[in-house]
Length: 381
Image (cartoon, rainbow, N blue to C red):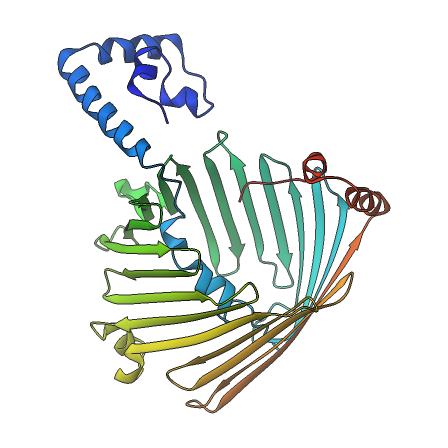
């Protein structure tokens, strides 16, 4: 993080981010910093920066990832495969990474039963494109704007319409700022679309606080809407606790307990404080509060079992297992006793590689961790 002395010595924060700054801008920054009032303000910021640096805080996760350990690692919702699904992956290069994937699906409740995707990645860029059987085209582009700043573009086009999302993640020494815009447009002299930000700040080595704001206007004929979410996260070696409250009055509480290296338990609670979300969805007031308990067990035979039950007696399980060096199997089920419905899914993932990739993999097995870095691609995420 740039200090005031570095700014006064013509090293701006833009230069520290890896961007070149013209000499005219450098001279303007130097002259501004020497003004009495500005110099006093910069001195105050310098003192605060030094005080913050003394705590030794690290860059926190994004506000939207405060509960990622619960939602994306323990709960079964993220891993349940509806119907039958088979993915066939082929990797022809490691660095740069080039991968193609074909997906076949039956009984998933969707119209698309086939999709083709390709991935190209280096240490500075990640490109992914896909096309499915319903002629829906998707693209995902991630690039490093500087060694620390990451930008993303996500686009989707189908018969239902086109959508584009632009994102920028700016990490600091003890905070994280994320900016996002979806379908921005300045037609009809009014801005339409959605723009949002989320900011997370490390308070201590374990406590992080965050805020998120969104502004949107669907059409020039409609008034704009805005809202704010606030939340916090406390993480230790044994447990992670997080909570947030949205502008719509949705309170979310999440807790993860690490029992040992192979077993984790989690509890997630969502409470609709106003009851508006349940009323708009046509559900009973009892659905305004849902508590879900789940456990994740990593087996010694390269398998993972996830079990889940919520307060409405919805049961679910997902088991993943590597049955061969090039094959992974996922089987899961969800039983909703209140609605008297049941879902069963089976997924198979096949991996294949070119001869050159297999040769590199065999060679990497005899190398140290430092030596393997020159063969591994670490794309921005």
